[in-house]
Amino acid sequence: MSAGEQQAASRATDTLNAESLKLAVAISLLRSKFFQHHPPPSQSDALKWKRKAKERKQEIVRLRDDLKEAEDASQCDIFPQNASCKCYFFDNLGKLSPNRLGDASDHRFNDVLRRRFLRQVRLRERRKTAGSSQKRRALGFSDEDQAEQLRASVDFLVDLCNTSSPVQESKFENWSHQAVDFILVALKNLLSMGKNLESTEGVVSSLIMCLVRLMSSPSKGDKAHNSDTNSQLYIQHLLRKLGHESYIGQRVILSVCQRISVLAESLLFSDPFDVTFPAMHECMFVMIQLIEFLVTDYLLTWSTNEGFDTILFEQWVTSLLQARKSAEVLESRNGLYVLYMDRVTGELAKIVGQVLPLQKLNSRIFDALLRS
Image (cartoon, rainbow, N blue to C red; front, side, top):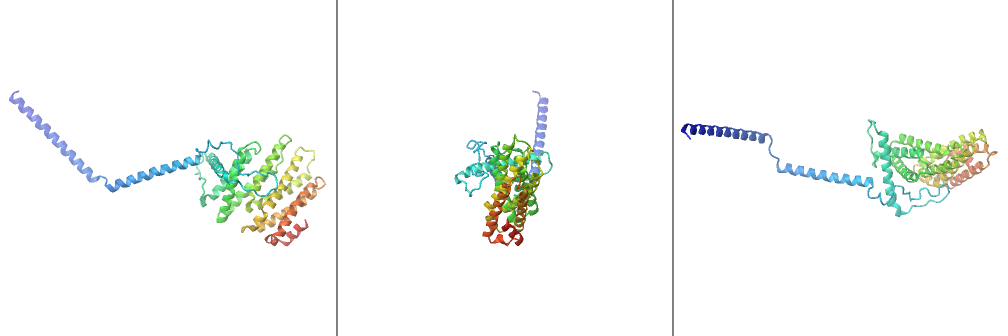
């Protein structure tokens, strides 16, 4: 290599080294400025993020456990979907009988049915609010959610009675039992808190009106008469179980007494050869029987409750006496009405005579009851 070529190569190497040096200096300056604005995380910050990650992982695990319990995945194989309720809820259907306690060994089974009922309620709530901009509230168990729990359970029970046949649908017994339990628990909590009383009364009145209408509506023909009669007994039993709470029971008796008076007038002017005439007679007996069940099953218990409404008691006793007078008009057609009503009023008078708080009702009403 000539001297000129060596000098040229040396100059090229010096130029390259200078460029590399400038690049290294520039990178060093950039890194220095970056670390000035973004200091490396300290040990305390690293521990903080590590703790947050651990908490998030624990939260995910809890949510998975809650979801697994809610879906009842572990119980599906043990208890099939068509399993029937074993708590004697529909025992003594249409019969006078003493109270019977359920078997404690069925607690686990009933708990499964309860969770399945909750899933059914949530599913119907989602279907109702689908496509709506209104935010859906979850069914919960805190004090603030009791009104929502009552409303959702009432809606579910009414829809179930309107869309399912109690005679043909095995799931009716499972779902209706759970709905009644939820309604009674939510109502008891709301009354004890003294909150949402007006809306609570509206929800309860709507429930009673719907069930009494289903129970007292005669069939339109002979073909479905037997099935309708059995369905009426199931609805009657639901009202009987709901009547355990005096807030519902007394209102049921008042509504049924008024319905008896209306039906008695309809029977008086109905054609005996009409196809619905026998069904109307059946409805009359079912309603009178419901009053007898509620009086004999619960009146003594109601009278000892602190929140027993004596004004409402006077109202339905008066309405019952008026219903008896309406039945007297039908004595020429069917004297069993008067005999049955006399049995109910006689049982009522006997209980009133034994319980001192019940004797404080209006003297005119008390005298009329004793004379009946």
